Length: 326
Image (tube, rainbow, N blue to C red):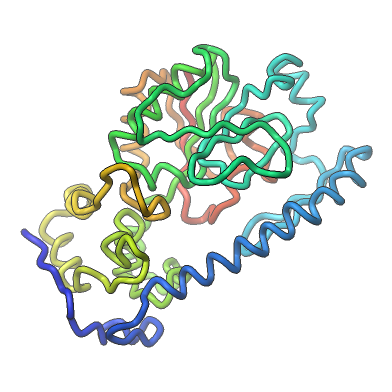
């Protein structure tokens, strides 16, 4: 089936999801909410958090203040001190920060190197590498040197070709036995919740309808455009008809094919690809990983990536986690 454009369409159908009206700036509520969230997160994380760290480090305790539905761990549990990092991975790996978090944004850990492109080097210290995956140039780290690699809610912002390249680079830099962890919105779970018309799952995406919120999991350009203020390109009924005819995989592929991922991207915050356990696992194996394990948030083959203060903190109930072992 072909999807038709709905420019100028009467979008009164969205009234049950926040009172949307024709001509509205559909991306504005989401943008305002995200800005408020990240402003509060920055104030807490990079102003108050160092105070807690300095006071409690001698006791080997960690109090992590987070926002929203993030987990609030206390005490040790599955957390690791730097001393334990050294014990497990060796002093050289910790000193040279041979642990890499891709798409880190403002994420920071004393033993890890943060990697990003659309943010500047953080001003709160820590190792940082600016790497633009869309150029498909090798990551500037030697092969077989990394202990762990990690990406949380990043690959949905990349095309499949970029992700395949990223997975190959992660495999290349890891030592044998090293672990590569992906945390990404679970498109298959989102599909099931949309199909069941779950009243809660897409609540964070109001005032979008549940159908448009489901589309945004993998093709948010089609929901609010590259400018984050355009109306949805397709009616809810068209989306439902597409999946009735094609099913989950072919339906998701049809939506993603309509995304514009031509570099240089002017809208890196948009979602442009979909991910399921099967798809992530297949692409990890194609990249060379010998073992692939689907995990619940908080679980990992790697002791470092079981630390709930730093990993799987972004909407864990909506997230698929997969570990690949070299």
